[in-house]
Amino acid sequence: MQDRPTTLELLAAVRDFVTRDVVPTLDARRQFHARVAANVLAIVERELRDGDAQLREEWTRLRTLCAVAADRDGGPHDVDDDVPPADPATLRAAVVALNADLAARIRAGDADHGSFRAAVLHHLRATTDDKLRIANPGYLEEASR
Image (cartoon, rainbow, N blue to C red; front, top):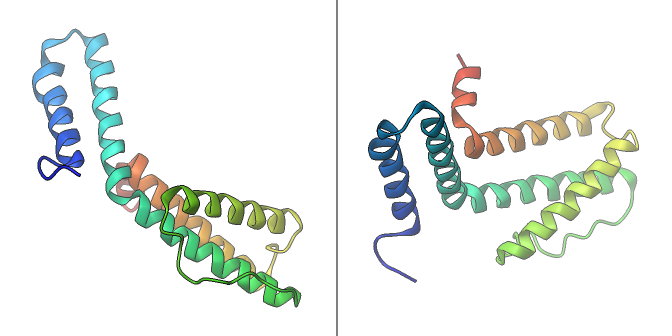
């Protein structure tokens, strides 16, 4: 592991260089592409900074939803561990599997009414907001005005 500069600091430095020093020297078409490149760097910065925490929060919400649905159905639910997997790849795979389970429950009509519907809507809104905080945080700011 490197001490300084950090990965986030390096990305920010490149983004700032592109935005401040490169963009003004280019024609309109290339300015647009340079701004797109700077935006991609900003997205990567936010993903590296916040992505793992957001994924753990999504995992927690999904585990709660799946446990509530299993309790309601009277069926077993696999809650061996209430802590998200530490390995990022394992965590991503677990979130994909939990989302597949939730999607199947939605398709089956489980979220058509009642408290489970409210919980699903809350989860979907929180997940969408988290994704927007990384991809386009300005959209959330505009939407809240």
